[in-house]
Length: 133
Image 1 (cartoon, rainbow, N blue to C red):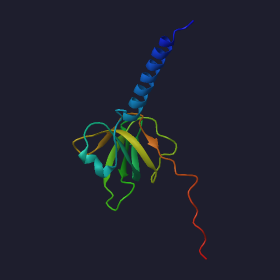
Image 2 (image 1 turned 180 degrees about the horizontal axis):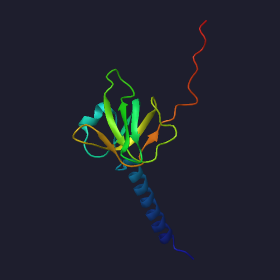
Image 3 (image 1 turned 90 degrees about the vertical axis):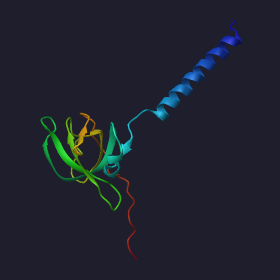
């Protein structure tokens, strides 16, 4: 026969592990997400969220793909130059919202972690405006 004390101990350990896993997944230690207008106030590695504007230049596998990101929302559309190396998603293009992880250099250029680009897909299920009566 198994002792009820062994069951209680095993369940207590399992519960403690579950709480630890939940805590680490929520609190993370992940990188903060910022927009171009918030970038100057941050230091270290961040995830930069913005909209691609202008014409991208360069090569993502050579010297780096260079493009400009601006704030997605707000009247004050701050811009930042991004240098990216790594694979470029098929959905990357001007006007697309994306996220890149990296750090800002002293000259204001945002240098990404290679391969960190994620494009945000436009919703297929956007609401349709009703026709005017």
